[in-house]
Amino acid sequence: MEKINAVITGVGGYVPDYVLTNDELSRMVDTNDEWIMSRIGVKERRILNEEGLGTSYMARKAAKQLMQRTGSNPNDVDLVIVATSTADYHFPSTASILCDKLGLKNAFAFDLQAACSGFLYALETGAEFVRSGRYKKVILVGADKMSSMVDYTDRSTCPIFGDGAAAFMLEPTTEEVGVMDAFLRTDGKGLPFLHMKAGGSVCPPSYFTVDNHMHYIYQEGRTVFKYAVSNMSDACVTIAERNHLDKNSIDWIVPHQANLRIIDAVAHRLEVPHEKVLINIERYGNTSAGTLPLCIWDFEDKLKKGDNIIFTAFGAGFTWGAVYVKWGYDGKKQQ
Ligand code: UT7
Image (cartoon, rainbow, N blue to C red; front, side, top):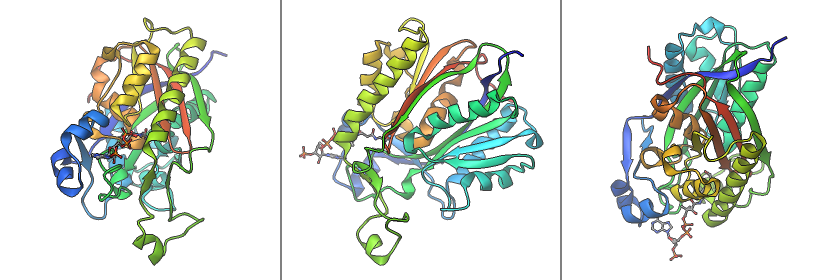
């Protein structure tokens, strides 16, 4: 039997209309455009500010565009994986809500929680389902409404994050394209440095937790920065070496968009020129599980069949890794 590969056959995306600029943030906390641009690299981010709308709203918009662009019939979708840290509800899963909104009748669906590495983990997880031969159309979504857990009185975190969602379709192929290799790691050592203190089973919500701002992102930025640079760089080097890729044969690096200085450090370590690194942090900030597919959504027209792409991410946990993808089609798919 011929080997089955899992190829990405299309991308869809969605970002909310509301643009939160550095100038507006400067009126909310003691910060300024110069600091944010030089230390993080974010100019503006999108915010889903309509009441009653959560992550599934953006995920649904992204997945609808994906289904339209790939000409997919809802009855043919076998599996939906939603990578998110900002689920609509503790339960049921955001993926289950998506099944209803997209009218999927023959799919099973689940959420995947790996913080900012969620979409990277979803890529390999979804690809394994396709490689098994039993699943023919798998939708992967990376979506986060980070504004729902950002403390807009904390200047050390509020400039970083934004809201957004994007989705890939994975399908089987016998061609040598698709998700070729993955190096994924979790160590659990990151808990003290990046977490939300309350709202989970260890510390359920109470008046105390609300009064003490315990439902927001807590981050010790400098420590996270250090681990992000070394772990993403090491993961990229590992995946490049074991697939005999070098700075000439790598066509694109798609890094998690957490901080432009982290992205530059990873590219420098790989000796890959700036033109080969896909970057949109300036416009969207860190959308957590959304960053990797949103990058492809933005730069899809640059990609060609056979391009060697390394996706890399780092997030709370810590979680991190790199995935090697051989791209499956030329240019932008639009219907
Ligand atoms: O996606 C999940 C993984 N997360 C990441 O990868 C994030 C990793 N960390 C980072 O990106 C950076 O550490 C931050 C952007 C969070 C912070 O940048 P930094 O260069 O590490 O700044 P710092 O925390 O060391 O703070 C430097 C100074 C401090 O002032 P003092 O103590 O030197 O007087 C901060 O109080 O900058 C100050 N500062 C600010 N100043 C103006 C912190 N936030 C701001 C701000 N505006 N928004």
